[in-house]
Length: 193
Image (cartoon, rainbow, N blue to C red; front, top):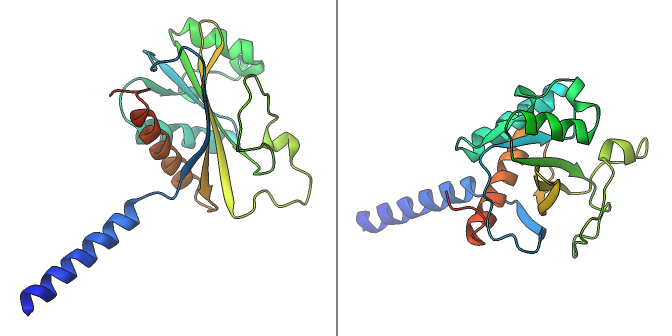
């Protein structure tokens, strides 16, 4: 009887640990450019678009740390204020520093897009520019839009939207988003390492 109780306690503990370590983040929309078989980048800048400079920098660092590897670089470590004057200036500065890819991440409102479909070339405005004063930012969820560009020709090669439960911990949201994206990329063969 003690053995059965011990097995049940161990199983309950294992189930608790697994449920605490899993993410509730889900990829709800994805677009892959025609002809994109896998990501073949050598050096990729991670650019977080929302929040203050300090928050963006810490979130970029969190993405790089969570994803692991050596290919991702937080953009705040290589771009200056002058580089950020336009998208083309950012692109050129990254190309000059031998980057071949860029990942952008930003929070979007749930009603900002139709998550059931993606349209090639659809443009979005940033949340900061589109939020009405006094309006709640999000319902019970947070959506993170991630886009991956090939810098050589400015081509969008992948875009996805990850839905997360609403939380005040931006770093946990970013970690969960990265885990959801990495799982999708591995499952679909977009990354192999």
